[in-house]
Length: 188
Image (tube, rainbow, N blue to C red; front, side, top):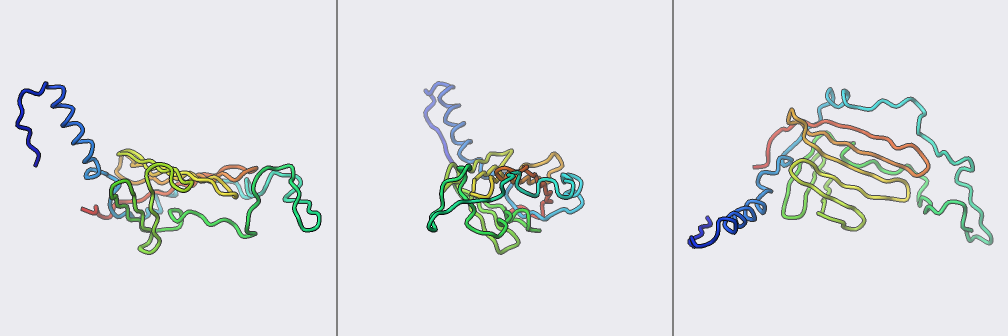
């Protein structure tokens, strides 16, 4: 417990000290912390419906054509880094899980998906991933050669967690996926 014994401080400085102490303890009231379970019915209500075949291919008329001489690739029309794999990129775990735990420790936010896959968000820009959070929203964005990914967690008015993931491949249409989670228990 903190006690200030000096009474000769002006009210504005005293208020400033209390404000700083209160702002450093916001993690105790971080409403995202806890265990969350996927709500399929609510997720279906907020899902964006795409027509079959819309936005599923590259708009590039030449496809992924490349020219090489003596086994060395020549620079092409596109300045984009080609994909290193012929496999489809892996979707973020938040789109695949049914349970999610959210915990905070300092400037790190730990997300555990289905009690096995762990993701640590570090505040700011860390290894190409920009992460920010406050009492209203968690947001992370990053780029890969295959697409730009933006993940956003927000609390709805009914105290459910809405997760929105935007996948934006270069030369193709962006897609948004929404999932709704119900709180199972807080971590306190």
